[in-house]
Length: 399
Image 1 (tube, rainbow, N blue to C red):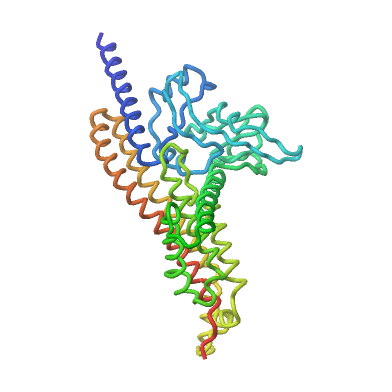
Image 2 (image 1 turned 45 degrees about the vertical axis):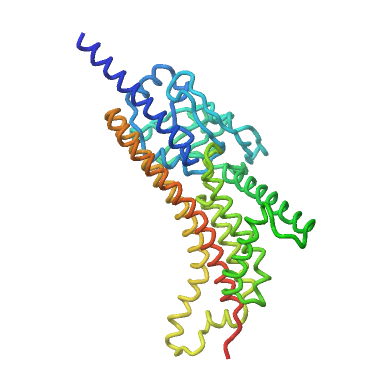
C-alpha cells in the first residue's frame, strides 16, 4: 500500500513537471523564437520499454538544451505537441539534404534523418544520433555510417566516422534567403514610390527607410570615409546595415523557427572577409606605407611596430566577426539559461518550478526588449567599424 502511494506521488510529480514545462514553453515562445523546439525526446526506435525508462529517470541537460537552440540545423522546427508521450508530434519544415561522395550526389529530405533517431552509449553517457541510407546525422553534422553499427566513437568520445561533403541548405541559409527577399520587397516598394511620385513627401515604407538611409550616409559613411569617397562604399554599408538588422529581427519573431543567423560563425566570417577584401583592394599607398614602414618613427622601433601593424590587418575583420557573433548569441543564451532554471527546479519540485517560472518569464520579457535594442546597435556598430576601416585605407597622405 505504501509502495502504491509513493508511486502515485511520483506520477503526480512527473505530471505536474510536464504541465509546468508545457506552460513555460507557451509563455516563453511569445517572447523568443529560440525556444520552440523541445529538447531531444526519445525516438520510438528505442522501444517502448526504453522510452518509459528515459521519461522517468533522464535528467534535464541544460547544456544540450542551449546548444540545440542556438546551433544551425537541417530543419526549421516550430514547436512540439504532446512532448514525451506516445503521440508526440513535431511541427517542422524539413530542408533538403544534398551530399556528395564517391558514388555521386545524394538528395533527400532531412525528415528521413529526424524520423529515425538512435541512441549510443559514449563513456557512460547517452548520445542521440540519426541514421538514413548509410549516413549519420550527429550534432547537425553528417558522416558516413560504419556498416550495421552505424556510429563509432574513439577513446576520447569523439565520433570517428568518415566525414562527407555536405552541400545542404541549413536553417541559417534559409533565413538568409528570407531576409534577402524581405529587403528586396521593402526597398523595391519604396523605390517604386519614389519613381511614381518624385516630388511628393515620403509615405508608407519610405518613412521608415529614408531616415535610416540618410543616417547611415550622413553619420557613418561621410564622417569616416569623406564626402568625396563615401558614395563609392555607401551601397555596401547600407546593404550590410539593413541585412544584419533584418536578420536579427527575424530571429526575434515568435513562431518562425528560431533563426540565429548572425549567431552563426559561417555568416559573420563571410561578412568579415568581404570587409577585409574591400579594405585591402582600396588601400592606397599611404595606407600600406603606414603599415610596412611607419613614417616619423625611429628605425629600431619600426621593427617592433611593423609586425603589430601586419597582425592588425587580420585582427580587424576578426574583431568584426567575434563582436557580432558573440553579442547576438549572448542574448539568446541568457534567455535560454533562465529557461533552464525553470526545468531544473521543476524536476525537484513543481511548486518551486512554478515560482521560478514567474520570475523567469518576467526576466525574459525584459531581455526581449533589450534584444530589440541590441540587434539595431550591432548592425550599426558593424557598419560603423567597416566605414572606419574603409576610411583609413583610402585616406590620403598628410603633407
